[in-house]
Image (cartoon, rainbow, N blue to C red; front, side, top):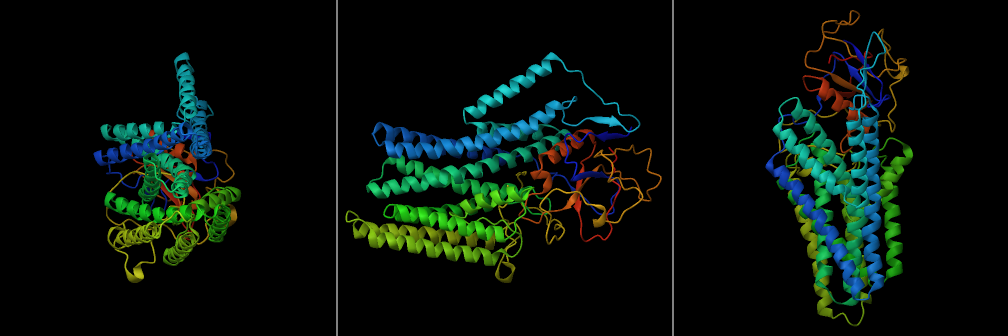
Length: 546
């Protein structure tokens, strides 16, 4: 039976199914043999613990400020908790609405309707009261969850559920749950990374400034600042791991590498935030000017690098502005290529800024600050930054997933954390093929037009259906290519984004639906293929055997 998709669950301008491509296609999940392990479960549980400790200590400290009558500090502390959390909840609920509404709109409930090739009759499932009741309950449940500001908690719990399901099920159920696990992991890491730099980073600077300004440290202040710092370092390392693990052309990060990278960011961000707090305790106005100037310079630098993460130009600019906020605190690679020079420039700039800010505080500090105390604080900043740099070299020289990067090799095949979405969790494996070299990938998900490829007799560019499914017993007569036996191939009319960018099927949520539908309908693992500039001929027949 031949079938075609109505496009509800797939990016019509970006994806096609292909029968018998001349190029090799990559498997959908990079580590098909990898399963959700006990170590992976512990990592998710620790992430939940970090999330709760960060939020609970901030709220506890805000309540303590209120009881002490320090309403100004209470208001600022509460603002840096509520506003970022609300922003993240809105984004999380928006993703849920998009995913669940399209899935519910499908008569089959899976987000994609199929019809026969010889007729337009759809396979429909009559709606019943039970399914409608479940939909209403799901909408109500998700609304309450996000109103209570615990959407991230639900996503973490759902990640654990999907991991357990992928562990218990055998193929093809294992593949399906593993893919859903990857998608959910990406979503939660995107949300938590955004929340970390909107909430934890400014909260850390605020509490350090209050401690320095008052020349007194409350236990709750130290606890809140420590939790914010750990949350920042944790989410950067976790996001880095998920991004690398999601790529089938990149080796995954080991947990040892993740821990060392977390220590790298823990000490470098700690040194930078202490320098910020020292300067802000004396020069409040000039500190605001410095932050805005640094953010503008970093954002302009990122825009000049021509990143390619979002689907439109304006979304890309907004994304670059958000990354500019991250650059206030730490290095965040968003561009493929030789990162050694960019990383070196950023480290030199931050080192000069830290020295200048700390020196300005030391010279203009108040009379209540003793010289001995001031020297201790300066030594803490210097030692923290030195330790962070040491762990950075340990990571690149000993624990980098691509192997030791020394001398000329340290041109940084560094994984960047540029574009936010998902992945499985794996250990080091054998080297995998590199992606196609792309010098300037398009910014929007546009289909390849007739001028970009050779037109063939089977070209279906003018057809509305996204998929054409043909049974293996009826091979196409006009195609000289042999029929595939290893399953469907999803062809995407885009060059594969060069690392550290997320693949299109991670960014475009419609492509996610397509992958999950094919996982359910195909007896073997579907494979995915991106446009290749190295092949002079573009295949124009988009078909698959399901």
